[in-house]
Length: 182
Image 1: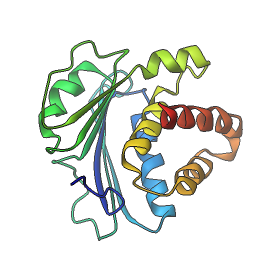
Image 2: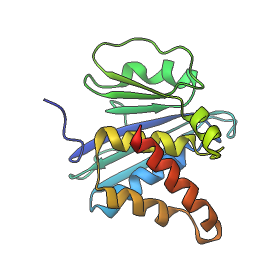
Image 3: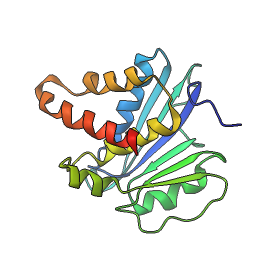
Image 4: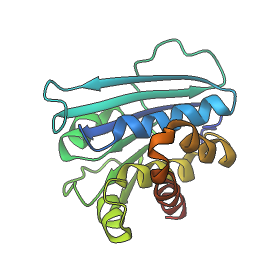
């Protein structure tokens, strides 16, 4: 029987700094909050910041969150090769590895998880959303887990994109929808 991700979902977003992984984590955490769930969001940076390693632990749960650190993720969203190598073994059996296949040429096999390859960087470039591969992957994460209501994830973008960057709302909404439709 498949896990009910509306009750509990543990995610690691991982890649290089500057790919928007912390932003993707914020979308998920905010959507959980808007649905009345308990959430945690914990960023982790490499020493170099932009271009260095970066990951983000996110938990969305109907129960209080005991620790913000995710060590046994249900889902890993990976946007670079080192992150796939680092986190693939951490995904719990039955979980998902969602990978930006544009940037990750080598994806090790595991027969007890679902590996989803999304050429999100290529799709983002083709659609004119140069910096939104992360949001496409977040849309795919939503499509696979349905961890919150559709209204909550749509409203989360509106909530976390500041008014001074309002022009970015529509492209983000389109990128999220694109990921959901994959």
